[in-house]
Length: 215
Image (cartoon, rainbow, N blue to C red):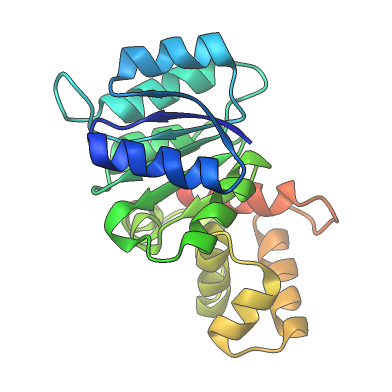
């Protein structure tokens, strides 16, 4: 995979470069500001951008705003993963609002498994989602009154939240101590309630997650 990194902390930036390079990926550019990120994406057209939220000069939400801009500027939409210490709920919701998938939001302090992190990169690059449970919880707290979501049962809410984190059916079954067939049934039901009929198109899962987060 060809990547661009935007991270202002030198040690973390260099650590990401070494990790990604050692696992077979190509880091095309590693920058420390929003404008430099936009320029790097325009120049290199990477497969994925890995971006911190708070970048110079203001250290507020420059990274997220740059992520929104580069996704708007490039077709097909550039997959991005936000890697941050903070949940910036407003801009996170805006980043997800285009409904096209290819979005991740991971919290630095909670990334404890290298294989899971690399799997999240692959999933987002393929158009899926990878969201930390705390990100899901904070965005969902704002959206819990949506009428479509209100039709879901508590168990269907649990399944959809785990889908938002990027878990497969088998992983959801293990997490909730359910039979795989039960998970499939819950997914079929919640897709129907969200007016997203069950098909073999994996993007239906992404659409359901985005409905969950953007309502």
